Length: 190
Image 1 (tube, helix red, strand yellow):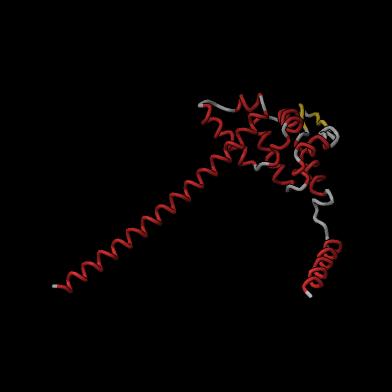
Image 2 (cartoon, one colour):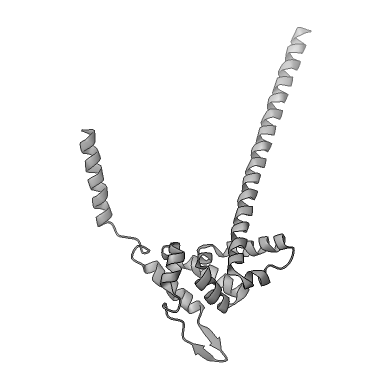
């Protein structure tokens, strides 16, 4: 009976997989939108002359997806926000040459991770980190990862401090309750 039920459940789950709609990323829709958004961001205006956005082949899809396949399924808006932040900090040329060609994985992070990563690296270097990160997208990637690790440690330490504080309050409360019981017992002895 159990085996039959298990087989029926497996068949039902396989059937539901074939009949349910696949997600937009599964069919490449998110990636197409991402490519369009990146192309639009890289569109340049030079003294009134508009250069058409680079084609997806100029963006080198295969290299990007080979290096960072997660970009195929990530929300295009998040990727666009990160790309825009990189453009704001370093310019379009940096996005195209350093990020898209060398370290497309940077686009898989959130824009606030890029901002915090630069702040983290500035603190670590005790000087402005932008010139160093502009020279090497690998350093920007290290800065982003360092910032994420710092926030994770900070969160963990905050949680540990909260737990310690709660434990101290509990100990203090238990101690006060014990003292009250001792005082009550001593009063009753008199």
